[in-house]
Length: 244
Image 1 (cartoon, one colour):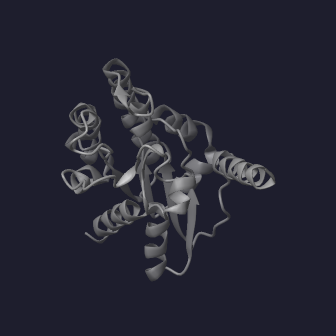
Image 2 (image 1 turned 30 degrees about the vertical axis):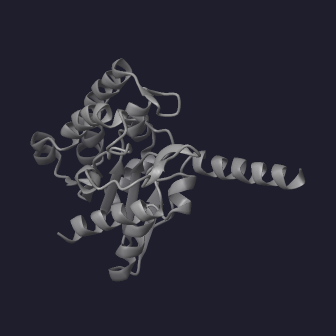
């Protein structure tokens, strides 16, 4: 019984740590700043345990830059509206973005998760459509705040959403429809040219390559987050895009 409460309290402490108000690390003008924005894929307990892509990007950047300062302002459960609110209301984060050399963004999955029920066993199209429409409204404002309002000249890398269902799952094609619609906003040539960012197409990297439960979407843990193997694959995709 004691061990159970110890584990429960440890998990609670970890959740509090990941949900706390982000603190901007102290940096000098000569430092190389890497800033991560977004949701659970960038920062969560699973991302920490599986060495999510932001940890891998940070490690890669430190191979060629000895003075990398890393700030991860991502927050679990964040939607596009939450990220926009964060940018509008934190002058410290905006200043950090202005000084950053590299910015990575993972956002949009929680816009669609609001349309999933019974631990991802059912997808409600009306909720998913509303999530996409809200993302469309927020996306250009998010980019505006980074590029125009903060005057950031950083290299920005944005990942597309993957489909967490196996190809033989009845929900795969339904999810694919809504995911592709949201990804089309991220991949819009108009927004890419207007705000000068690069797309890391994780959706294309995973599509058609599912051989069993690659992600934490199993009967035991219904969370559509990457496991260690897939976190490594996402990290490699970001690094390859940075190199290109």
